[in-house]
Image (cartoon, rainbow, N blue to C red; front, top):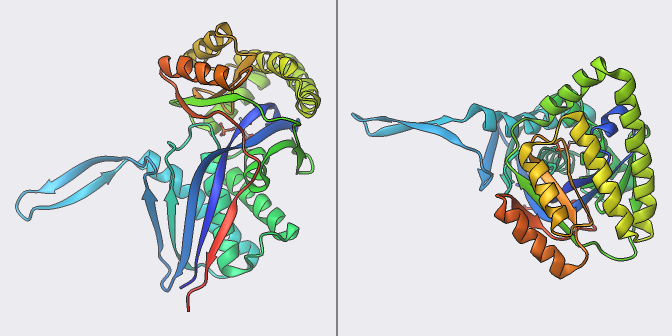
Length: 343
Ligand code: PMV
């Protein structure tokens, strides 16, 4: 049976989260932290999903003391968070390719908790779509038509599961590198920095789902339409300036823009107490700028360091405040495929 394995980098949002849901541009980048989605067809119509180190929790164990057999009680929330993207992604792919519902075994390998704010759900969506397209249609992922199809179907998967989602996460993970996202097309334009950044990327536990946080911004917008539109316009301006600052390696300016963007996220009400504290402390420790990255409510944050040594110091500061730091640099590529044809 043929098996296909997709290696997916996760991502951070550099600028423009939330505003991108309202059709504004944003900038995101892949980072060198990876998940694997591996799949193969099964002969019956079962979907078998296996998790490897993926932080899916069981809530408990029921032991029958007479027969000595036990039943696991799953943590429905974390199990359904993972499986909804897989089930929906397969359905969307099968409908698009006009193939009938089939049986699959899907393996998910991850060391990140689901919903860390690093695009884990987008990585599962892209991985599932890529597996399905590879097993049912073509594994020539260098073909721009196939690549775009994967990005679009993965985005559709996120929209269907979450209710609302921008193409930012799925397009960034598909194409990789620093990407200027134009949701109105949708398209992900590459931005190539002349030198690489020293950037601290970490996360704290995320208390709400992305869907909850997108909804809370929507509620605020319905109450304060005029002011929220102004904040979205300022975010757009920040993103445009950041695009130039990245291309010109103007890290002082990038730091200032990060702080302004963080202030807007504070105004939108999505920054957690821990993040306010971490961001302020990192700036006090000399970070050029720092911000919540992604939907908020905890989750991912980033801080711009002056150089490698400074990044190592900021990492220690963030970890002393209880955060987990996962990378000190960005990554240049999107997902890659490994196809094994078995006779
Ligand atoms: O925290 P994440 O990785 O789920 O990022 C969400 C980014 C939002 O702009 C808030 C939502 C979206 O769909 O773009």
